Length: 105
Image (cartoon, rainbow, N blue to C red; front, side):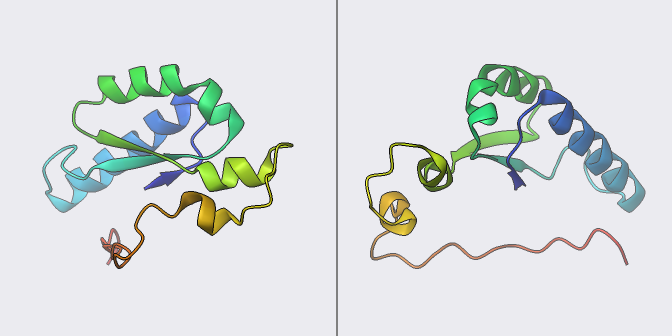
């Protein structure tokens, strides 16, 4: 997961670092996917540029996630709903488990 990307250069830098680590470990190049979590106004404004950059990276980025609770909490139009109740789309289901990938030994 890459949280709060605002500029395609950030995505390119992360891809470069991950490709270096994948090569060093003998893993398939761009075999590890990145999910972008867009949660700032700048990220929303730059969404087209981020999507174009993501498309140029092959299958590295296959998902975008929108952190609406964070955007909502920082906006001037706060309705009084809690951030959790605003973004809870998994009601009744357990949260997804994170997967840890050791990059260094």
